[in-house]
Length: 176
Image (cartoon, rainbow, N blue to C red; front, top):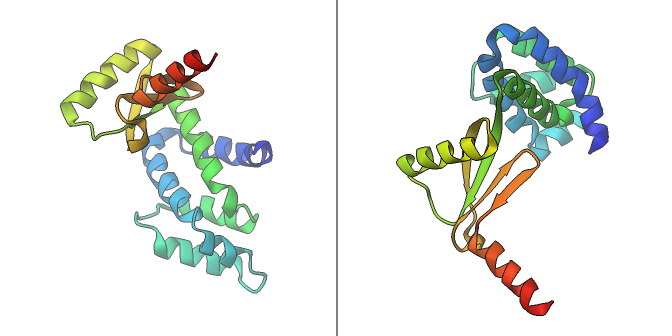
């Protein structure tokens, strides 16, 4: 994992510096490229020695769900020509971290056993922003094994108020 981060860092930094005037726009197409680059069949195709960089580029651009501006195409060409398509998800992650740092915010993932409606999510976001003392970009993922409650991950910080976590704590207390 550290190797991927080391390889991705110069690409993410260069992308950040080049797109500082339109970070939100760049974030959209970087996320779209990240999703494409996570496909195992695409990575096999790209690693095939009989396939050229231009063929891989054409395939990725053809599959992209968003219109790629010229800077995005240039960035993608560079990544593909250097054989770094598999590193694109890590590049996107590091780019998002730099973008958030500039905006003074962080990504937060709320794991919940049940769907959270809009009003409840807005209240939860406000509470979490106070708790973590920064603006949060909240996404919700369902995990039925939590039974109830929520588990929040912000960077390397975790706030777990789920029923599953409380049951685990009780189990440890009873067996100790």
